[in-house]
Amino acid sequence: MNNHFVIPGGYKKWSVGLMIVGALSLLIGIFVLHPGAGSHGDNAGSTRFWAVLLQNSIYWLLLVNVSMFFICIHTLAMGAWQVAFKRVTEAISSLVPIMGLLTLVIILSIVFGHRYDIYPWLDKNAVAADKALSGKSGFLNPTFYTIASVLVVGLWAFIGKKMRQLSIESDEGGPMDYETAKRWTWKNIIWGSFFIVVFGLTVGSTMPWLWLMSIDPHWFSTMYSWYTFASTFVSGVALITLFLIYLKNQGKLEYVTDEHLHDLGKYMFAFSIFWTYLWFSQYMLIWYSNQPEETIYFIQRVGTAEHAGPYKGIFFFNLIINFVCPILLLMKKAPKRNYTMMTFMAVLIIFGHWIDFYQMVMPGTVKGDPHMSWYEFGIPLGFVGLIMWGVGRYISKYPLTVKNHPFLKESIIHHT
Amino acid sequence: MSIKKFVVGCFDDEKVLFPAIKNIRRAGYKIHDVYTPFPVHGLDHAMGIRETSLHTAGFIFGIIGTATALGCMGWIFTSDWPLNIGGKPHFPLPAFIPITFETTVLFASVGMVMTFCYLCQMMPGVKKHHFHPRATDDLFVMVIECTEKTNETEVISFLQTNGAIEINVQEAETGWWFGRYDKQQKLYRHEEVGY
Image (cartoon, each protein chain N blue to C red):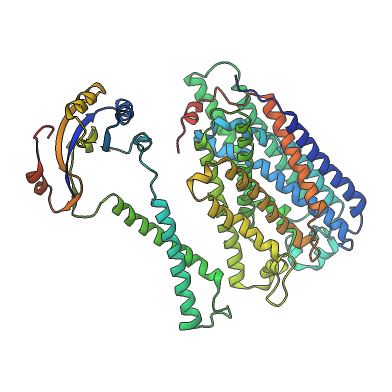
């Protein structure tokens, strides 16, 4: 049966090679950028070191975590069309524990290394002198930050593991009878809804505030979490698409047809527009009310009419790549069913939202001195290698199709 | 339009209808249309109908909507009657976006509904020939157009072997007309079979 994936040598080489590139960048970064120095922002190199790590770890963690969310929403909505490639989605989500661990190491060393340049609210003296910050100190303090981060990452990993276990258990034995299938689906629904509640309370609200928005602790936006969620969801779907196309090109996943690809394309199209909607809602309200404490966020990025900010190019590039390109290139039916076009768009979207995270993190940390060179590109390549390695490991370990899933037939005959 | 001769075959099952369509097309007969009581998934593919261009029309209507909204507001607020609103520029693009979006959606949706009606020849008062009244109830009605080369009896027997439960030959108006149904039926009805 064509249900088993053996990692080709080229894939292995690429994944390990990319991880080595990431590790090398980190190593050179440690020597060149002096991560231990100047926690008040007096050493630009060390700020850059931690800011890039923060941006990438959180971006790639949220990206792989979206896969489990994808499975859970479809479990709850009885969305059977994705069952044919459910194992691939699971494989991506299996990276949450290791990615979570990496993220925890990075963000906790930022917090316990007293990096005031990354999180100004860590500075006790500054908080005591600042009325706004001391008012927020119930939320923005190292203890809460640590407990919340560890708890949340742990919960994501734990429930995700449960969901994957249920799926793997179903592989044993033959097709389920009605009663077993009913009980199995119910179990999936219970764990899936549990995950969605946790996901909604974390990615949908608190975690982006805690991890990213607190870089600019005076500034706040209620749109921010949804904006982050939309950003990661669309790039998560793009990641699923990439692996799907790769496996199809390897001659695997014979049940996955153009119809499934078309639906993933619709997701990418729709959520790109959803992201733009949230981006615009955040921007327009701040632009319109014109309150100094709110507009500072955009002045840091775009600058003012007289004086253009250092991030102006990236700010508009972000909009073009994440809104204009998807809406124009993915609008018609043919590109959504075209492997080359979908690969191009998926890579573009993942890169675009990585840029989005770059402009979320950098203006508040490295401020007027942005870099976009070996370190900024080396670290994400390492994360890409890690994702490739983890996904390859998972799908070569388990069968590629969840063959006893009660909804499998519905997915095979799926027709958009 | 014109009056043509049609062979009408009625089926009572989708499972019979689909292979029948395939065989009829393979045999080279010209299917005028298939009338069903409800939308049948995949029927358009089976019949080999080309993809609709309704969405292209929708895109064009949307662009017209965007241009109308931006052009209208831009002209009003910059040259016709410039106002100082909260110190904002005279062409405040972010503030115009919601209205532009709504206008785009309005133009696209209304335009597409109208285009759809035009493409399907639907309008109050517009009538078309009904090949079988039970096409709105429980029968799948396949209509085959007869050209000068078509042998009617051959088509009828071909339909029979493909599982049609009821077959008749009709001469009917292919286009639409204004007014009442009996107007055409009195004039053109050829045979009483099937009614």
